[in-house]
Length: 183
Length: 183
Image (cartoon, rainbow over all chains, first blue to last red; front, side, top):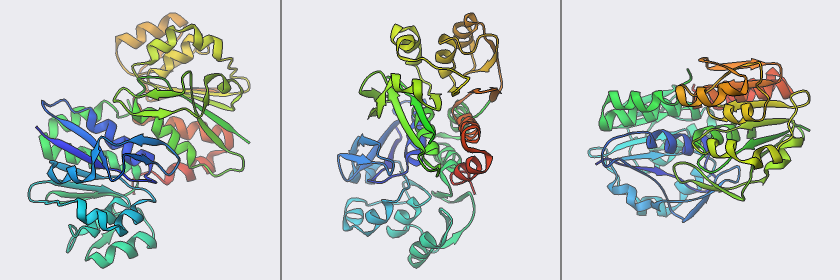
């Protein structure tokens, strides 16, 4: 019964969060559950879309997969002690994924140490992520074991595909994503 | 000062609406304004995401572009007299676009009569759209003059690109969409 937690926060990027939410919600497997988790009951995107979380951030610690959305607010969350206090993640038992500046959150939690990872291009994020022992590369999708990162919103499609495949197999991942792929 | 109205409704598909909202919001042109318009103050997606509209549905009648999102609820909106009562659209002065079952709304309003258009594949939508004098085809993107339709959520990217290009030129469309395209 796989449970997927999508980590949101204030000033998230709409596509990053809603693409994951929608595509993950297309999976048809008994017990499959997707939840948007956040520190606060309401989160507002950088463009002003306000939504209500489904569960508290700490519930991601027991999810089968944790998907970090991106957005300007990721820097504040990375700097907040609440991030480390709320999340006890473990790539030995969880699939961990991040798109764009979500990679900063995975790095801050220490899960990218000694690994290659990708993020939104530019100096700012590279300079924030590298000190966490990460080799930041410019690729659309980087996966190693149970950890995956993607660069630029729409690469989220391939990252989401990878997460689903890792949890319930390639066939269901392909079926779910195909319902959204251009004719 | 182009103004874009994205038409939402209860039981909209998340990707269809939020992809358009986010990508249109990336355009950097003086006076550019994007609004989610709907009959009701709150609309809830088919997966349960509730958001607040920016403006009433009728304000789309004076927008420079009207973009119809998709989703299960499009059938109810198409059957509602409020659709025709609220919207007075004119492709002579407006760019009109629709993704998936949003095509049913454009067809119901009579704007696709004698034209080719695409929609989410399957008999149900084709059978609903064809009686409005539309030749339903299976293509990712169909454009003719000021009217464009796209099939399957992620084809929305190309439809949104086309709308932006039509309003403010190819260069700005390419710049805006490139910020989301996979590395």
